[in-house]
Image (cartoon, rainbow, N blue to C red):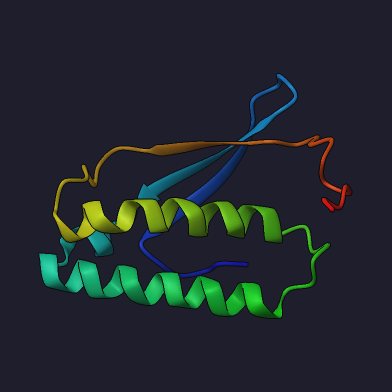
Length: 106
């Protein structure tokens, strides 16, 4: 599980059969200058990739970490360009019951 990084992470059950991943930038990350934020964000992405490499396919943390990785990779250019508001919550909807989870595509 991710314990450090640019985000405070929360998972919310919205009561409608799905969950939401809430990402808030930490005060420490927000206090960094632009170059430090970019470097820290790159390091965070590498950290997540490393953690995913050791998780089993069926590990319950895997889906959340994959979503955090995907969201982080999409945010990276905006972090580098300094065009992201660091005081807003990023909300990502998680699919709970995906009918394709156990389906192998041929």
